[in-house]
Image (cartoon, rainbow, N blue to C red; front, top):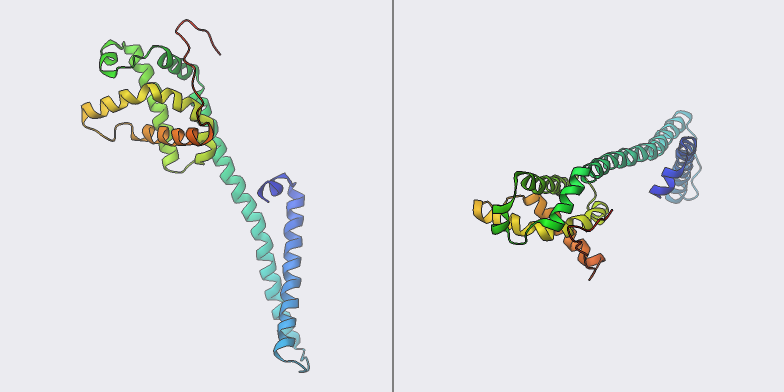
Length: 219
């Protein structure tokens, strides 16, 4: 129904609202008439002009409000989807920047598996790459946790990136959280990874990642 409404032109939506208003008006009048007859079978109908006008005015007002509700609902749906689209575009632009892609590629190919040894060998630029990716994951995890974006739709898109990268980063986050005695260290990034891992297990099953070497060229 939502998709069908979105595909209609503005004139068609207005026409639909008017038609619904008229339908509700007729249903209101017919229903009241039927109730009157059922409640007082055989009783003569007494017509009161002002009472009839008042009743019809109430029916018309209710019908207009009902029809107008369709327009309001459509506007709310459109506003909600516009907000979500802005968030998705922002996430896409951030995660698909050249420096983000390069940082993730470096993590895939060169970040040591052992965080205790790896941290001692990281250069300032290497450290920046790790923090860049973690900060992006933390930002997205915060948006998901606050339900500012729809979880399933976004998780389906970012899961391949997050799940693969988190296999390399999780030992480092765990190591730093323990060393700092801060269990909440990058908690939003961890939340994102947990949601993506759940989605991956449910939808990709036993799919495996391919780790390319440092000299391999790829898109």
